[in-house]
Length: 285
Image (cartoon, rainbow, N blue to C red):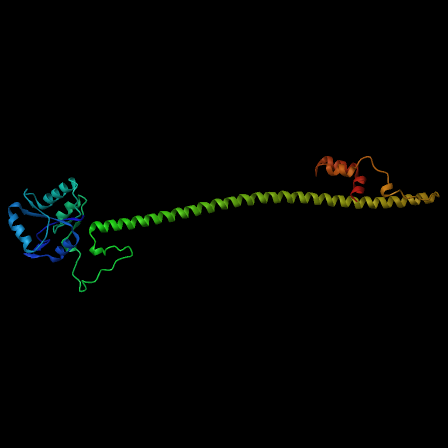
């Protein structure tokens, strides 16, 4: 409930005339009005008459019965109100030193010269425009209502900001983790590909060596056969071909299978190949 404290002289009354702009504002905004004047208590009767003359409505009239200067007197009254848990929503006074003393208590103060102009409009019958939430226009809202609406708007914006921040952080963290996982998987695949490439190279080298050895052995075999045939013919013996296929004598050991069973590239395998070269190449062909 907006509770406004206001001065009299040079605030709502000046040179015997009402300061209508300030009076209109107080009438429009306040729900409870306390007149706080530096006039002495002895002038109460005249003060009441002055307020009636300008048709000013109020709920309480507090006058200076202490003899203190206006800033000290009025700040003391406002502090007593605050200490008693009675709200003071706005203090209007023409003196800057008094406003400063009251503002130091955490109360909103206003210079009469800064009071918003609430003039009657030509189209008074028309309803004032309202926003989507059906709230009152700012100039028709009480200070308390304006503060509540501003607080609600701030809370909504803060919640939206926090939601956006959480979403961005979630997306950022998730994307970073996924990227790191992909990097790890790619690294593992690179290692596997490199390993397989080395194995393929080793096998190709061994195959090439076997092929070369086979060609060399075949060449030696043909040359030896020709020489043997010549020798046999020179002594009158007709060469006879050894039986091939199923009729060929079988070896006691399958040297090719034994060779292939040994680890690729090992010394044992190389030595075994040198020892049984012919049998291995023959079986490979």
